[in-house]
Image (cartoon, rainbow, N blue to C red; front, side, top):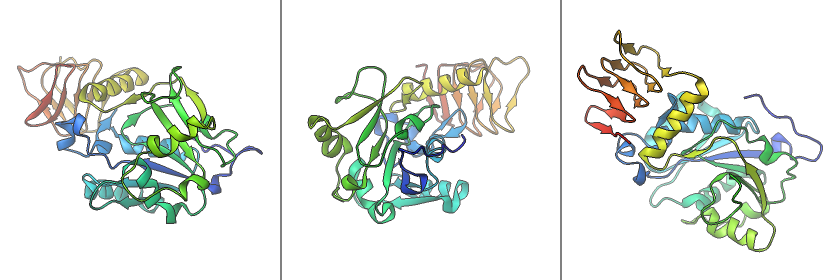
Length: 282
């Protein structure tokens, strides 16, 4: 995505940072989250965390990621793929939650406005509408669908002004409880509607649906580099990871990198994530 230039009434890129929240343990995503941190699970053969960072990169060049569960793997992934372009905030002990994570990054944020996204949500749409016209002084939430803000709203992203960030407690707390709910109650929460594709990859079924949506967006099955597909095999509607070996039909399914589907098998709406980990049909 191309960077978005600041308009006259919008906070400048230099005064804006982006944070991708990637510390969750992903319990509901088990058994997939036992193999990889949730943020590194691939959708359309791209790690969720990379997709989230690319969306942030459209609105700011200053980005950070928090890590807790499988923190070493997240740190390694960021170092290899992003280098110094992304700061990694490792949380030791108890995970700090979505608000505590921002507080932990306060020295790095250093007076700037913040855009926050979750690494475990998939969406191909731009964050530009969230920051369009934002002057850095209000709390905004981008809410998927037409239901408005509430406890069950699907939050695509949020903005936090420094006036809020500076007072957050560096302890396990959530943005909904300590920021969004109270701001909404005061009538000060700005809600931006999001009507594009958006899937919270919280469960294996959600994760599969995100991959199927990526295939639909691509217009055909997605096949990674070095994957070997046997003649006559049906891989329609599927995502095949790099280096995978496919010797049987894989339909509307996901095969992770370097995994195999043996002759005589048939995957339908399933996820092959490891030699002993197949989830589905879903």
